[in-house]
Image 1: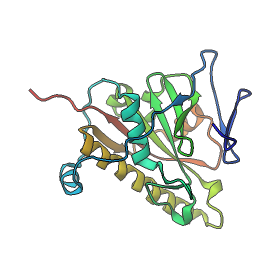
Image 2: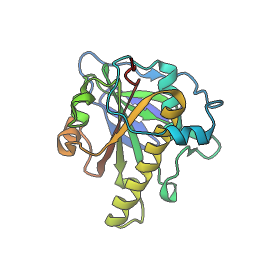
Image 3: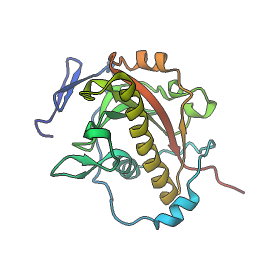
Length: 221
């Protein structure tokens, strides 16, 4: 891990000069070093678009680290290393959307530059990411959080509009990846944002936009 990312055990994660809170308990999580994403192959685009859909029934089988790596890279990974630009567009390249990854083992921050999962909270908070009953057991819940402090020169209404659009681009990337890989997903707006923001110790400028569940579909008889 290079100087762009530093883990500080006193409770602050510095990424590209930005401070992200860490709330680790005594049973600290380790940083999850994801395998390199497999960014070739997949099904033809038109087939994937034909099969893109929302699903609210999931098996509880966990995703492998490789599948999780591919999923996060497809969502908002770096696809141009020389510039740090990503697989989804963002207005003025603010890259204001962060992905928090809520798993049974705990909650992580996806550091796209290093392609690692940095621990945030050593607690299963999947049930806090939405009001539907299935979110508590689905293997992966992604939370899209906008950091308005990165949106330099934007008025408040522009921050709201552009961050919502940018989160939508990421969500669609996840939908297309899931359709290609035989996974199930649904994007969700029913989130108790105040409660989840408190749980994650978000800053005032950090706004929860959407959540998205990902897992394996229930097998049909």
